[in-house]
Image (cartoon, rainbow, N blue to C red; front, side):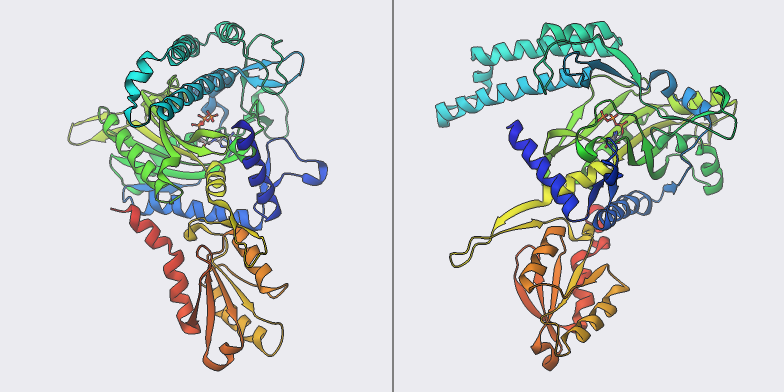
Amino acid sequence: MAQQQDDKLKKIIAHAKEYGFIFPSSEIYDGLGAVYDYGQNGVELKNNIKEYWWKSMVYLNENIVGIDSAIFMHPKVWKASGHVDAFNDPLIDNKDSKKRYRADQLIENLMSKIEEKIEKEVNKGRKRFGNDFDEEKFIATNPNVQRHKKKLADIYNRYVKAMQDNDLDELYNIIVDFGIADPETGSKNWTSVRQFNLMFQTQFGSVADDSSRVYLRPETAQGIFVNFLNVMKTSRMRLPFGIAQIGKAFRNEIVARQFVFRMREFEQMEMQFFIRPGTEIEWFEYWKNYRLRWHKNMGLGDEKYRIHEHEKLAHYANAAVDIEFHFPMGFKEIEGIHSRTDFDLSQHEKFSGKKLQFFDHELGKSYVPYVVETSIGLDRTVLAILSASYHEEDVSEKGQTETRIVLSMPPALAPIKAAIFPLVRKDGLPDVARKIHKMLRTRFNVMYEEKDSIGKRYRRQDAIGTPYCITVDFQTLDDNTVTVRDRDTMEQIRVPIERLPQMIEEKISMAQFLEQLDV
Ligand code: ATP
């Protein structure tokens, strides 16, 4: 299972590189750990996802507006937010392999493995008993399942308490007591667990002393909080209202070995929704459901998502869930929904000395609003789309074996919407194809290609997820029709040239994509 997952991730990484989606940063210098660059197709995919998110949050909600705040912020922001003192991960080193791990992740991985074992036992039972299988009874009585469950509960209870109490010694003890080994080497020779702050620091201005230390923001949210008053005043919005932002964030992650899932420089799409205290659970449920619908609307498969309740609530939260996606490495967080209470604004009131309150006419009083946050990783969304839409299909014909790799991603998000080919590079076909390209390029991202055989051109477009391939052939010169090939069905139909804009628009329409969500 783990090997299969590894292979799938490796395939995605290789494909993303070969087809211009994602390259290791500074690759000619052997790369920089957990930093990646987006290539010609990756940047288009990323921009389309941003458009989908931005429009669904800002345009579809009349009480949400967007901002774009700076990456550098006053250092006191990070004191107030708690990041200077508490944005830590528990780190542990293996003395033999010299590899560094997050202690919490080692323990969570062990718990996932035990869960898998339980599932395996249940599946065995299901096979053995067929139609008579009573899952509940099986779980309650099977000795193997009971043993695994007891172990899981033991670990879970100790782990949750240790995380809540920030008890690093206990995290170490759990690792030792349950025999957790270095996943890469099997060694159990561990150092103690230490806290590690994830913020990058740099110097501001020309004088290098402590007072000029600034941080690269580890989240975009604080840029929203410090602009709460500015936006509320200038937009004349009243509670409840939201502020959305897309931007870079930086974290000096301890373990960064999972491609764009865990990067040191990444992009977040966050929205902070300001509300009257006491309504937070209602809004938390609302945004959880809306965001889950946003994900499922992409059509990557509803079964690929699940909701995970937090074991340890962050210092600012009174309710929190992760939306998890089934990545090649298993179910992992793609988005967090957090009810942050009035923690952030109150902290900024305290540290800045400015009032960050809303006057509620209905209640006749001022208060610091509560906040429900939705926070999704753009790069994790790219990885989700790439891995869910990557398919190898057997297209063998007449004794000739052939597979095609197709990225069957939502057409609205595809980097290139249509590719235009002349069947051959002569007899005036390229001229007609170029005219069609010119007609379409002001509306869509289209490409013209005449190299190699038509078959090879189709394969290249399939591999980057282009929904339509348009071919100009000799019949075109007679009747102004072209063949249009559909990426998913590979069917070809003849279409009059003048119908192309409408046909493409219907297929790739972001508006339709948003309408499905706007119900
Ligand atoms: P994790 O537990 O995986 O480290 P987190 O709970 O720290 O994630 P948040 O602080 O809630 O993450 O950030 C919101 C979102 O930002 C995450 O759901 C994820 O999609 C994205 N994100 C966080 N850290 C990274 C990273 N290092 N690389 C890429 N995306 C990230």
